[in-house]
Image 1 (cartoon, rainbow, N blue to C red):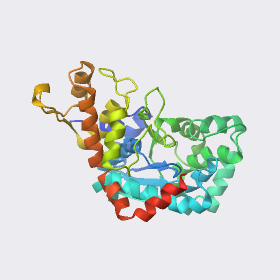
Image 2 (image 1 turned 90 degrees about the vertical axis):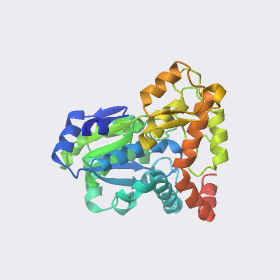
Image 3 (image 1 turned 180 degrees about the vertical axis):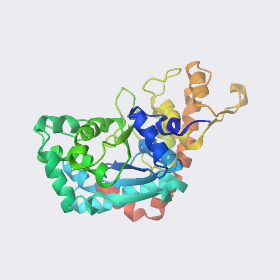
Length: 337
């Protein structure tokens, strides 16, 4: 049986620092943790990677907060206007509740705009802004904010607000994609100067693009991802076209989906095959699945179908919500054009 620290740090890209998280789990049975996301582009299935981690932390006794960082979505090159903030935040929240399924009620959902303008927060922002050079702020934000040419002041403020969220959400542990690492490592240097602990961080991996080529999945590229609102037919068609080289796990979005999304959520992968190809097979160990795949004992097309079936099931609650509220989805889709 896995220990709490093994569960907390499983499937992570990096942990800062493991001994600190181990101590938190030991000393604070009701520890606080948070994850933040800015409602900018279409909500896609790769978000399930950090959300699976949130579910694990909640099952370890933690109290989780999901931040809908609406101000951040505007600071990032005005991707979301002030007029669209609430619409997109509502869309993100319903998508998250859907993909969380039965676990959704374990978390509180907070808009950044409900506290990021308050006096204490703004004064702390001034304090840390006085300590950070523009070069350092730009480096911290470089993997997160879409900068082109000279950085805007808003893009340099972005990482500073994100650092402060750790304090104002009282997070003992922060969960984030590995692309956010530079921001939070700057926070490790600054948080104690404004009266808070450094914080501990679990960074999750990024899912490779379904197109292959070594790029990460992108909400701005419809061929690289699956939206959680996609129909079963669209999911199947997209997965069938995905990059999935036989016997190769490297930069393979399909086998990565099995490891980082399907196994943490379902604990197994069922592959249906005709009898002449060996019949149905069920994997209950990710290591066993990956070994079989590397040894070419299972065909990529069979794995793709199994992944499509699993995703259709996992994404069903979110999809059904928007099927019942088509006017919301239409307004959202139009806002992304």
